[in-house]
Image 1 (cartoon, rainbow, N blue to C red):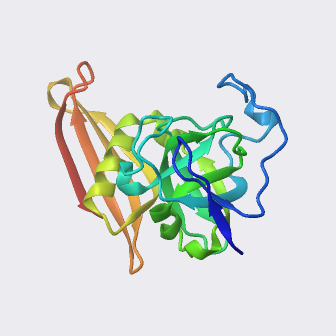
Image 2: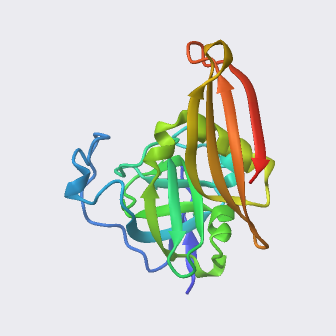
Image 3: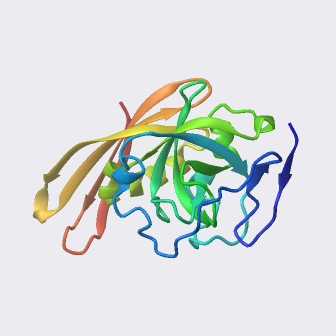
Length: 219
């Protein structure tokens, strides 16, 4: 199968040669899916497809493709996923998972398709020559609601460049000395050689959001 790259103001989305744009009309309002149940359950996996791109210098979201160690993606402008949101993508063929950040929006791109940066596509164990793979796409509302968890995720991605975060969970949240709050998260990290768990914690002032300490350890 051959393919084409169509340059545009939002990067260089990979579009297979046989792909045709859907016929539905665009909707100018971001709440095109006011009731996500009418299309799919927003918090449940959506079976779709992923393509790949090398990214571009300018994005609709103003977030560079290099963000989060290139674990980034573009979605359709009518998609319920928003700029900066974390999305879990699972390769249906081998079960491998990556968590990516939405950095771009593409007009008329189907809501059940996602355009991954090449590094994220390869992290799913996919051969770039395939061009397109079947995936399950899941919003990560738990992480979105935990801003410190998302913050720690980005730090861990930078600290472990040869690993990908494939899952996460909040371990605890409690008050410590001086009225500060300590939140602890566990991240599952995978590389071609191994899987390891990293526990990350952040201590901060809830009134000012100033951080006093950040710690990581393998567990």
